[in-house]
Amino acid sequence: MSEQMIGLASVDPAQLSALSRQVLRLQEEVMGRWKALVAQTLAKAAELHEPILENTLPSLMDSLALLLTPAYVQRAAIDISVIAIAHGDERARLTGYDTTTLIHELQLLRSVLMETLHAAGVALGAGEAGTIHTAIDSAIRESANAFATAQAALREQFAAALAHDLRTPLSNAHLAAQLIQRASSLQQAQGLAARILQNTSRIEDMATQMLDNLLESGAAAMPLRIEQFDMAALVAEVAEHTASFHGVDLQVLPASAHGYWCRSSLQRAIENMISNAIKHGAPNTPVQLWVHLTSTRVKVSVHNDGPPIPVEMMESIFQLYLRAEQARRKSVGWGVGLSFIRHVAEAHGGSVHVSSTVRDGTTFALDLPIDARPFAGKVVAHA
Picture 1: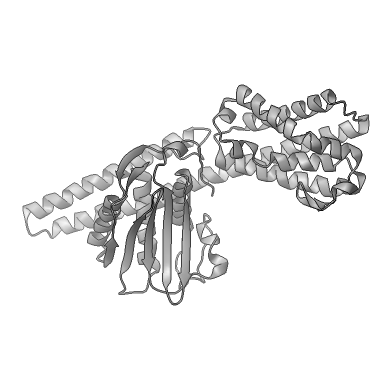
Picture 2: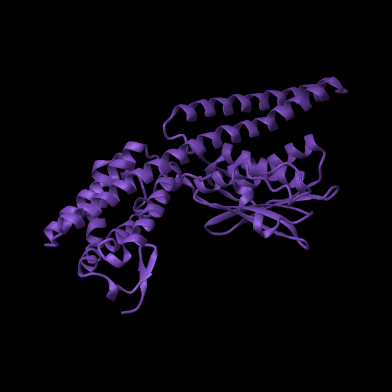
């Protein structure tokens, strides 16, 4: 028989014990029964799309089967630990689970597995059954620890990202107040005062959102207030606001793009993209923005000239608190702002991409489905 993946290992099924092969043949039935049971038993599991619900559990089932072949016991035990940690981490980032739900779903998997083996006439000896139970107990502990660690990090990320984003409206309000002092007319002063009110209202909204989310057990989830609007109009609005306060040259190439998204979170994400482009771009060069629409997706791109991001930094710049000093003239790192952009993109069922070369400069692109309504409350971003 040809080699295939069993859990995380590449093994020849012919080398497996008869018991391992029996368990593998029943995997589809076990997973089917388990998915039906958790959907009925656990409300938070019933909300998940099937790929997210299954997560790493098919690989866990493979590795449990591998435990029943003596030659692979050590490898299977290591794989189970790796899979369990990934499962707990992803449950924290991709679901509204709490610890109780996480533990319960794994206990249900154990019950379904044992009942299915018994019904199929697969006889486990006392030692073999003990091995399975011990492995699942270990997986539950590993998953719960990873879940708790990820949730703590996500709460910290939320608070840090909010504190970071509060600086923009505070700075805008401060600049507007300074300009009022030098305003040449009452009309100009009234316009600047309106901007102060707008920005202080945003600060209040952000602070309220932070308190609400920190008090909820599922603080990792990003609440989306989906509404229909023109993405190009939002980009133009943010660009105009930024240019007026920072005195930079922003070139906007919008194409009308109507869809369903969360306006407030995307406003913050686009502000962060523009701020990063201004901060890390070459001096006295324009920042370009454009909106590209297809039949199913919209892409918001922000481009700046200047030193490129090294390839090895392409992922780390999106991680909270990880800094890319060596990438951009040893300036302050980008972690909080860009991690929030990724959070927003994934909450909408989309993604964020970066392209950066010496010749072409750097472009960040927010790539979203036109209609994010199916993803509201279902997709949660990672740190």
